[in-house]
Image (cartoon, rainbow, N blue to C red; front, top):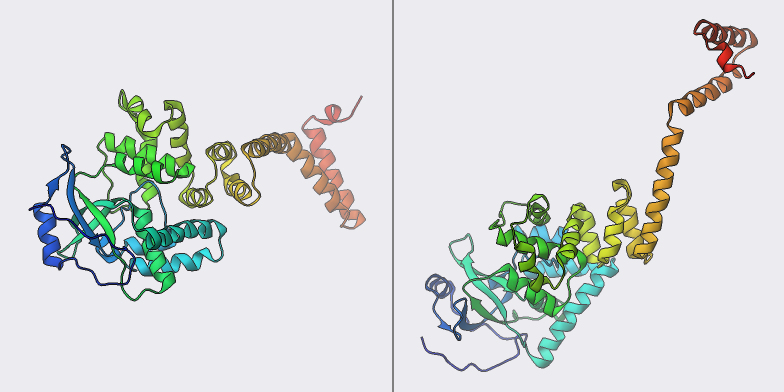
Length: 365
């Protein structure tokens, strides 16, 4: 195969695809045709223009973009990328966090139209399950969704086309580096990045049968890192070992709270303070942090008040307090019976106190 010059054109203009049929796709994926760029063995200079319907984002990409309810249906092939974009936009109408994320991607789609696609999407061809092949995205998922959202918003008659570059050896490290250069991930996204890098080094591959992708990343919580792993990850994450371990600990939050914190980009320090609270108060604290703009100091103050309340509650639950509370309830109850019944009840209590030998102790000297 010889290298050919290609005419650059707008990846979002309304035109048909010039990409080959399914047989050609299968052939290219199967034999890995292409010209190696430079001396790297994991990059293949096969630049193509694909439609989003020919592509599939990586389910286990550390940075999550879609809302959970849309994400599940999309990756279960119940809806296509354009239906997912429509549902995502509908959800965003009532959520400022999603509105901000979608607007960023739409702005990217507009920039494609005005300036063209500067960086290609990278990925590799994998079996699709229906006997064919699909281009699984390694880096550039934001560009993928930018094209889908823009196509839906502008009601394009033809699918947009995006420039892709075939990579024979995709890695989590490349995903992390791409994420950090394109847009700094949220604290939750960075926690997933640390987990993904750690699991890749330990050769723990994602299980496609996992329904909740966060469960894959959470596997890193219970594993002992091999010797030398953390120093190896420091140049990639640009954080100290201690900081990465603190990030990893954020994955203790349950999935709905992780998704909420990711969507609203709640800072790492705030999330760490939330984890210091009793578990039953995590949700309210996260909502307060997102909607009321609480800082880490605000949440820490909330934790301190919570600790004082717990001590007060413990005191109120002591046997002496419980007994005293019962006595007060008994006294109030006797006021609702007739005099003869009241005398009978009080005589019974007096006899019990005397028989048990508590009389002298209960009567102040």
